Image (tube, rainbow, N blue to C red; front, side, top):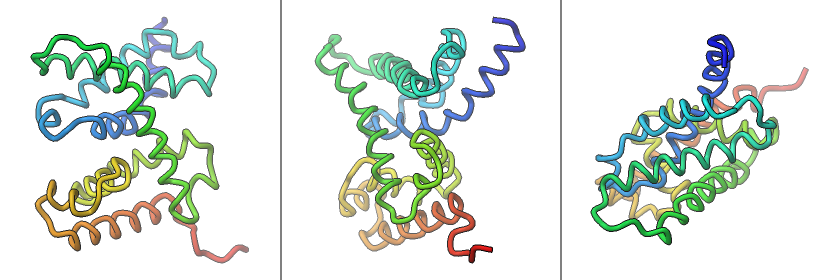
Amino acid sequence: MSPKNHDQTANHLDQYRDYLALLGRLQLEPVLQAKVDVSGVVQSTMLEACESGWGSLKDHDKLPWLRRIFSNNLLDEIRKFRTEARDVRRERPLSHRIDQSASRLQVWIESNGPSPSEMAVRAEDELTLAKTLATLPDPQSEAIELHHLRGLPLEEVGRRMQRTKGAVAALIFRGTARLRQIMQPNQGEPNE
């Protein structure tokens, strides 16, 4: 691959960075979150995709292929911190869980009333949501990730975040409102 094509591919792949980071955070339990460098896994995934024929894939095949590479890289990183022998039965579910997280992300987008999914294709919505979620204050994005994307009840989110259930609900409400505002800036404006 020529340096110019390599740079173009890298720039195109960069739009997936926040999306993959979000999927990675959703897979890691708190004890592993402190040990696994998700941004490093994302970076190695980008490099691998760049060198492995990203440009030859059809558009609808790119996101599942990228998730599969990311899943394998994340699993390799997790293995470094496990003292147990390799267990293939545990490895397959990680790939499946990443796909499930991507599905939950899409369901959440569609279930929030008027949503960006009405204006763009599914994969673009997921990428936009992940990028926008990364712009929120950490407590808001963490509460949304834990409650809406991991499916944890408010009480559990509050326990993990060391906040009351009401405080967590307020974070989620403000974060969701901000997401809608950013993702749908013209909502509610009269048509001309």
